[in-house]
Amino acid sequence: TTFYYATDGSFTTEVNTEEFTATTTSASATRAETVNARRCDSSGANASGTVTIGSTLNICVESNDSDVSVTVTSLLLKDSNGDTLATPVAASTPNFVTSVSAFGSNDQMVSTLMIPSIFDSAGGQSISASGEAAISFTSSRRVLTTVRDLQATEEYVEFNVNFMLEKNEVPAIAK
Image (cartoon, rainbow, N blue to C red; front, top):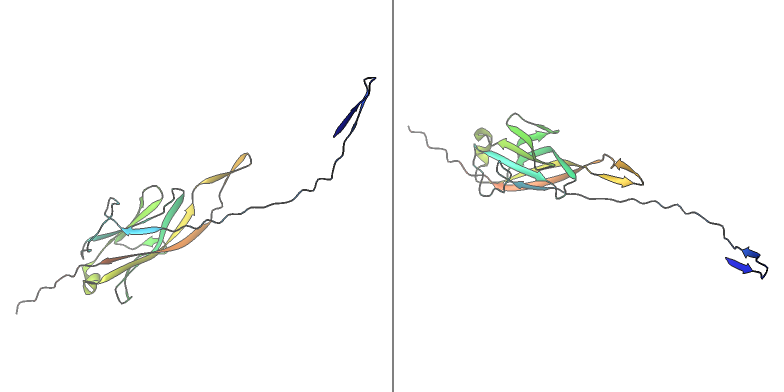
């Protein structure tokens, strides 16, 4: 912009403009999440050592992020040959000797009874507890001047925990 002043107090201006061309921009983001699964005790603390047949096996499934909610949808227990021994959780529903409970703010603990008649044959083996968990985002984001929930997308991720199952010695029957 240029201003011209005359000595009599009048002035003139000259303004040069260009046509404004708007551009459209979009943004998207992808967020990949995983879950951690581990053996735990009934309070959620880490558990180690062999699992005793007849005891309760606890598996804690958790996210590293506080805004990710975890829901266990399946859990299989397999022996070292890959044969399925038990299905504690199927289609998000625990069986009659299994419970799924909240653990932490958004995580879950699966507790299942290691029934002797099912697990005696697998004693002394490494057992694989593998499953799937649905994860969903629980936070919101600010868009302009309103708060809009993140789209309610559920993703499914797999997890696996290996542990040793203690061998039960079956006593010899007296003749």
